Length: 478
Ligand SMILES: [Zn+2]
Image (tube, rainbow, N blue to C red):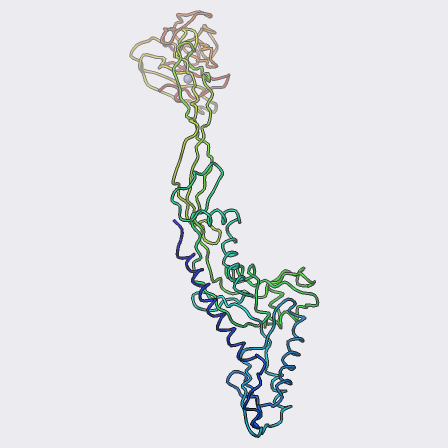
């Protein structure tokens, strides 16, 4: 749906503008049309011209030609500064003709010099009002409409704007393709209206300047040949120092024709709200799935199928005020390509000589009498298990006996290589039931618990290592 309100506003402004323009022309005709021969003059009546500046009476003259040439001279004097602009006398300046029998006019020269002082040179312009208060002046009705367009173009491309204007009120819109966007509404958040009037020539802005000013409060002035900081400050009634404060030094210190300068900083008057639909292609993540594989040894994994991202087209409704998104909402989502799962095969096949990576308690019950850690000034590399329910010491996981026999302070010791990086050590045994090279599936009896080697009582010393580094067995015996 379009915002009818905004479009209606522009149309309304246009009608009011035409009416105002018509009445202004009428006034011009009355004031400045050449005097027609008046039959009354035949009867000895002479014309006197009373001159007013608004309410103020300046005096009367009999020589209308002197007034006209004074006005022309004033306009001609001002013209070079406003090349291409139509200049005219302030409409407050009025000449009222009176017919009298005997003109009694005071010092005409003095009256004319008053005119010289008070007469202001103006240009026909359109005053653009925001919520009823005049905000800027632009050249004419076309510039007024151009300003409204520039307000919209500040945050939309010409293509987007054209598409929106052409779409009318059609409910059915073509579906957006990935990467496309479309404006669904543009509204100017203020009541704008235009009225024909006169303005100081320097107050008139181009449509682009006017739109920028309304949106930001910043007036940009483009310097012309012969401009100086002082002259510009005077034209825009700026306190000294303001220009330097508002403009970067490089520009300010070298003002030449075309230099753009900030000459006003006011409050922004207008906000432009744009609603947009945007379609974007987005990736869809794939899932990772694990599958048991009886052909693969326990502890081994294998990628059975590579994952592939999918794609979806997401339509988002975006509301932006002065180009800044203030809300975004996903209004549609279409999956155009489903993702492909990544499948990882996980081995379940057990071999009596190859460890599963999961360890069983290596004794018949019992409790941990000493944990791994510093003890008597050196590292106790394993745990001690004592007070078992029975004497049997068992292989904690599938493996092959690497060593079996007396080994110094370990006493009778068995080392099992689980052939998956892990080794376990069982020490202080009273007797050994296995020999090197023997396959020992998990739970195989390796011997009996004892007190051989450096030991202060019957217990099992148990170590776990991975790739040659000892680990805390408590992390594995769960
Ligand atoms: Zn120990």
